[in-house]
Image 1 (cartoon, helix red, strand yellow):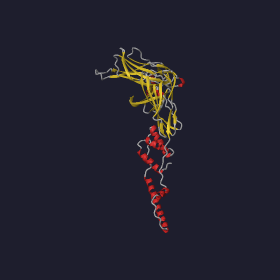
Image 2 (cartoon, one colour):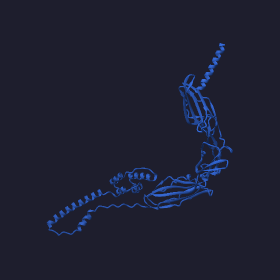
Image 3 (cartoon, rainbow, N blue to C red):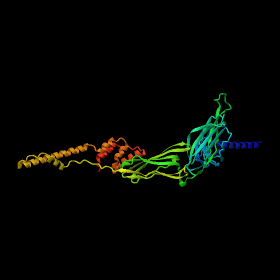
Image 4 (tube, rainbow, N blue to C red):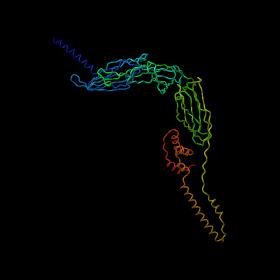
Length: 496
């Protein structure tokens, strides 16, 4: 009897040990089967005073996209102990095995059990269900850059009450997409229907798939212990409703083109005659219908000139399932000699003619006026002053002894007069500001100051200021130019 009793005690001890071990670490999945695209959650729960969870960045080869922690105090066999949980979120795309993980509890290392997760394709909603989600396209065969209208259709059977609705737009990889404003509401007698429209443009050739999307719908559910008051005991039961998927077959354009549509191009200048080093503004416009966003920035080149190609802007709207609008780019050109703006070309696949088309602008000749040479007023010469003195009335001829004295006094007085004249002229020049400094003071914008400084590009100091002003005018920079410093520099430096 004693032996049997001991055997029972031994067996109970083993079972207790196993149970205690099982309670130390527990690993679970939110679900062993998920729909492709959904997020899976792996949770590790451990009990003890000192718990160290694994420091990992991937699960079964998939990146962990989020982590969360929770803890609480539990009472077991008359003892208080701590329970902690850590959850790892990841998005598997196919069936996977989750290898055991090491968890350290109170100095001991425990291994979690191996888990498996399967990934299944979503089942599209079918006719007759309370809630249906569909996607369809106006065409399933297109060319690169050819617009396609995509519709997302949400149907709810009449009489079905939904507390919450959250529609997820379709994932459109390899497509440029824009939602067309204004949802369309209708009914077919059985369902209330809401239609959302998108204009999508394939960006590459091949077989492109638009995967199923889904809507989260919530229905209010009364709890088992609820009161008659509808505000008590209610909860939301969520359900995912999936759509179908669509396959689009996309053909490449000839010559590796990416631009599809029907376009016209123009180029205009604000003037055809400019002064040397004066900026000229060129505006390039492309109007028409098609994927205007795919028009690349034009790189205009003019020999022996400075050219600033600004970033283009696109203005568009959707008309009858097509993008229509305008591409606009501005270019600034600064030159010292005559030049010609060469024809600007645009090559694309024409949607109306169904062939490759090249449109171009006419060449534009620009005449550049040379800079006017600046003239300086020279001081009166000694010879001119002497000639002016000779024009005065001649004194009577004195005696021979007096002539030398008269000439001596006259020479002395002339010298004094010349000296005083030169001093007055010198002082006047010092006190009178140079014309350029007066003009600098009067400038009210960077553009005015820029035009004023252009003739002095040979000077490194002035050239630096010009470049900063160019950046302000044509590149939206914010360089500060100190006018007082500029004026001081012109006062000190002599320009030829």
